[in-house]
Length: 106
Image 1 (cartoon, rainbow, N blue to C red):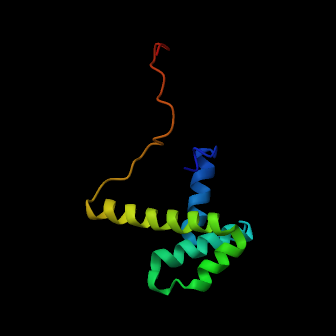
Image 2 (tube, rainbow, N blue to C red):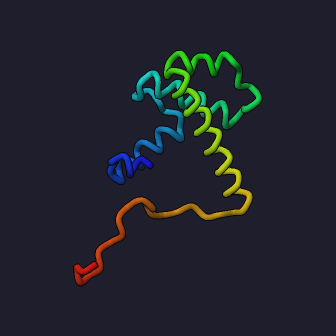
């Protein structure tokens, strides 16, 4: 998704490393709040409270808060399904245009 957003390979690696390590200092306050919510939902689902949802709604508005909650939940679900079936990760950017043949013809 980061590559689709226009980040180069080295930028994707740098950003995903920071995200994975919880090194969110250079991100905007709203982004850090969204990351913290997603981490809480992922690691301690039962601890998510109405106050957490209200804080998201205050920062992002009710519709974007719903988007954040839904997407975070969906990603967790898909990860668990993939892990359960032991599906391998994709190594290439599946959204990238296919490489041109060596003869330059499509």
